[in-house]
Length: 466
Image (tube, rainbow, N blue to C red; front, side, top):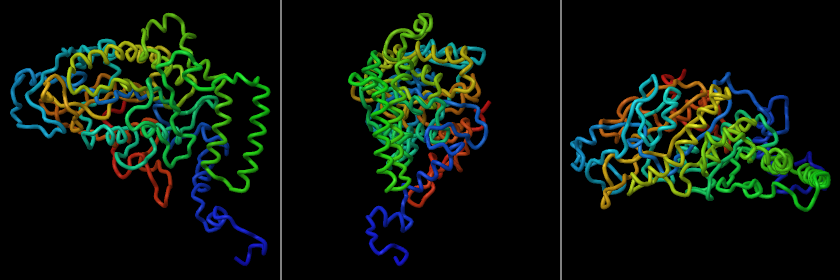
C-alpha cells in the first residue's frame, strides 16, 4: 500500500476495485466496448457477428402449454384408439392419464404447401405458406416454473438473462425514446413473474419493460407517462440537476454498470413521455387496420406490438393466456376454443400486416408455449390433457425461415419427438443465428465464466433456414 497517500482511507468498494475485483466496472467496460462509436447509451444500435436475416423479433407466448395435437400436429391414430389405452402402454406423465383422447378439432390442409392446421386457427392458417411449424420441440420437465424459465431464459433453475435481454444486449435498439425490450402481459404478472423477462447479470438496461396491456388508456398502460405537476421545461431542469448529482455520486464509484443503467433509466423515462403516448395508442391506427385485428385484449396488444416494432423496438413479447392460461387439464375443447378465438384473428392479422408493410422479411415471429400436452385424457375428468415436455409444437414466420414447412415429427400419437427433435436450446441457437449471432461466441463474462443463452448446448437447425 506504499503508493497510497498517508491520509488515504479506502472504502470497501474502493479497496475491492483497487484489488481488481470491480466486476461491475468490468461489465460496464464490456458494454462500452460493444457500443458502436463508443456511445455511453447501452441501447445504442450495435452490429451482430454477421448480417442477420432478422432485425427484430416478436414472441407470442402461449402461456400454460397449448396442446400440439389440437393445434399444429394432427394425429388421426388417436381417433382409432379413442376411449382405449394406447398400444404403447402407460405414458410417463406428471398426473394420471387414461385412454387416447382424439382432438375435438378438425385439421385441414392450407396454402400451396398443404400445411395441416386445426380449425382452432383459421386466420393463422391463411398464412400457412409463411409458417415453419416445428413439430418436434423438446423441453426438460413437465412443470410450469422450470419450463417457463427454460423457454424464456435458457435455464430451468438458475437466474439467467431472458432471451429478449440477450437479443437487446446484442443489437441495442433503433429507437432511443422507447425501451429496447417490451413485455405486453395483460392482467398482471404470470407464474415466475418478472424472472421471465429478467436481465439477471446483464446490465439492467436490457431487462424487459412490463406493460399491463389489459388497459386501454395510455396513462394506465404506463405509469407516470405524463407529469401533472411540472411542464416539460421544468422537468428537464429537474432531470439535469438530478443527473449532475448522480454523476458526482458516480465519480467516486467508477464505471459501475448497475448505476449507469439506473441513470439511463431516468433519461429513457423522460424521452418516453412523447414517444410512448403515440406508440401505445392504437386508436391512431386507421379504422381498416383496427378492423383487421378485431376487438379484444389480444387484438389490441398485438397491434401495439406491431407499432412498437415499427418504431424500432428490438424485441416484444406478447403473453397470450396470462390470466387464463392454455393449461387446460379439463374442458380442453371449451377452454382451448375460447383462447384460440381470442388470439387467432389478431395473430393472423399480424402476419398479414407485417407482410404488406414489408416488415415480415426481417421480423422474426415466434409462437410457442413452455411445453405441450398429452395425447391421453387426464383423469378423473377425462376432458383435458396433462403437461407434456417430450414432444410439442412451435412455429416461426418471417425473418429468414422457410415457409409452408412442417419440420420434425412426434410419434403416431403425438407424445414424444421421434424425428429431428429440436430442444429449446436448439430453438434459441437458431433464433440467434437468424439475428446474426454465433450462439457459441455470443457470451457475457460474469463471476469468472463466459455465459451464453444456450449454456453449453444448442445446435442451429439449418434445415429451416431459407
